[in-house]
Length: 407
Image (cartoon, rainbow, N blue to C red):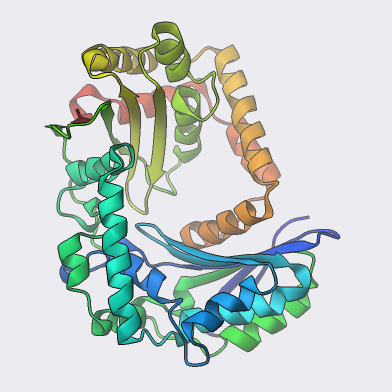
């Protein structure tokens, strides 16, 4: 069955995937607000707000917010990206309205008590310090800072210890007031529930949200830098990222980029990088490629961790693989297999109701549309050898590749 859609008078959008006879259900709110939308003095604020949303509302203290879903065995969570904030829950289907009401309360009635803000500030600073002890994670954010410079997309989502210490309740209220608006929100759900009842409950609990347009301007990407940076982190293992500019969310070659990324260094053990570098030469414990599209830009990168003595050889082998992709078309057989693999992975990922709920919420925010599985598989089928070659020659141009190394 296809997805069901509804738009409310205040601009809020609903997308729902019906399921048959399932006992569990999933509901989430995706907000078009992330760390990219922070002003200069607000670094780390979007993530700080995500934490603070659970610290009490006009109706509930922090304990009651957390206990509301925990008491029925459900899961309540949230996360922040550079362009979105998401609040979501998974629960038994008889608790559907309970989840809807709570998420609406959190998103629109949070009071952000000063005492709780002070405690959460310390929690986030601990999180930043812990993150800095994880070079395999930290290098991805530092790489985006390398290529985006001082642009908001180059900032770490967590902020810095200094910026987080400077955040105040007035900053939270200002950001929420200009970004947490009905027109910039999507509610998504997956479960066995009559659609008319779902519409009724969402309207009941979300209809009070502001219809204002708000301040939704985002600084455009004017330049993607090409840099090489090596950092002595005194780590046991060396970490390397090579990559650069890729296509944005709605580009015509987006699907071809996803396919090339998956073929090059996706999660399967038979990815090109894994077979030709890890398995053949045994010199990289972990190697992968990653495609991160944004509204008006994107990043395609290769990451590996290896012994310091093997770093130079590893880097050369990566460039050798990229050169092959730029100069030779994938064979029709290789392309066919790459398509089959990606289609299978996507189909399996959609089996999880929570993953689907999150994916369709993001799709509505980014595209104002959700594709059904047939359309997705058809788009993959339509990718040509020429498309993949064009992607490789744009994303992996030697003169546009940046490099970051921790050693």
